[in-house]
Amino acid sequence: MSKLSKDQLRNEIERFKLGKSTSYRISQYQQDVVEAEQQEILIRIRQEKIRVELLTLTGEFDEKYELNQQ
Image (tube, rainbow, N blue to C red; front, side):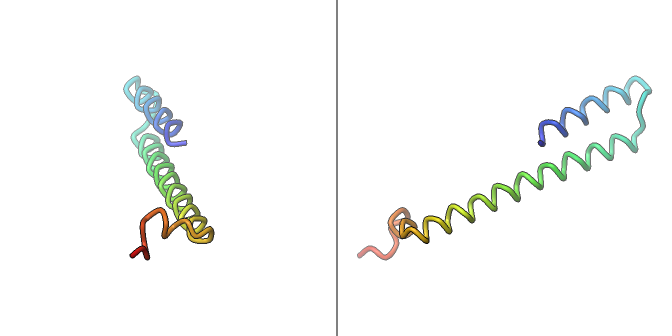
C-alpha cells in the first residue's frame, strides 16, 4: 500500500512541476503516504503480537528464548 501511495505522490509532484497540480494536492498525497506507512507498522506490530501469543500458548516461547531453563 505504501508503494502505491508513494507512486501517487511522485506522479502528483511531476504534475505540479508541469503546472497541473497544487501544493495542497501534494500535501494530501504526502498525508496518504504517512497514513499508509503507519498502517503497515500497525499491521507488523499486530502480527508480532499474534506470533508471540501463539508461541506462548504452544509452550514454545520459553523454549525459543531459553527462559526458565536451569
